Image (cartoon, rainbow, N blue to C red):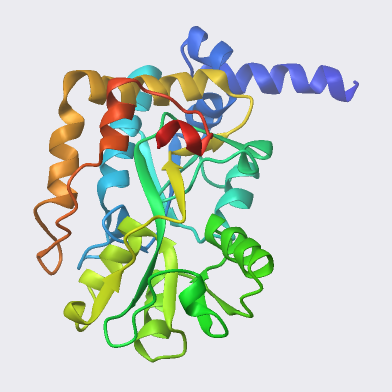
Length: 302
């Protein structure tokens, strides 16, 4: 018997658990149905998007949105008892783990850009951030030029790395650029004066400063170095799954539920320490909610 003939009954069995329309629409849904499990990739320290509470449970703004997606998957497959597993990812592991099907979607602070679109795709944008500079008030760094000849830190595998390297070369800044594996490490590098600035997405570094030992010691630059649209990261060429995810997010927008989710994480005290981000919804995000898009072009969000 040929491999082709063997494959046919195997594929039939794989899709048997799915409603027929779901099997036709999505390889990701077929995989989830076959395994009886959906695996959600998440960050472990990206306050308030995706981080651990005091019970080591992943929580946050992105996790709440992804929880709505998980519920939509359960409904689509007719599996209310579908197992949900969580896997922490980093800036360098998130794309490989998605592409090789270890995780089914990634919920965190991943920027949708043209370069990443070559490997993955993204849901409707669910947040719009700007890359800014966090520094100590005792040694303020308000711009890239102000860091000339000094050491800065950012997160490895992120869009900030490319932006800083480009500015370093174009402006001949002579920067020493350190790469941290996560926000906690990046913040510690700044706290211990091994770098004069932490350069990353504004809302993430605001969270890192707010949860630090001395939040009052830090300041953020006023002008963003770039605009960063976030979305749930998905595998390419699976329009059925992407449609389900986008429909879920856009339903939150249309019904207004997104406003309560946003306020819960950005304008109210959040667990486990009861900090308040004091980060009102931006005009850019309000624009996306009114007119949803998954376009990676940052100019559309300005």
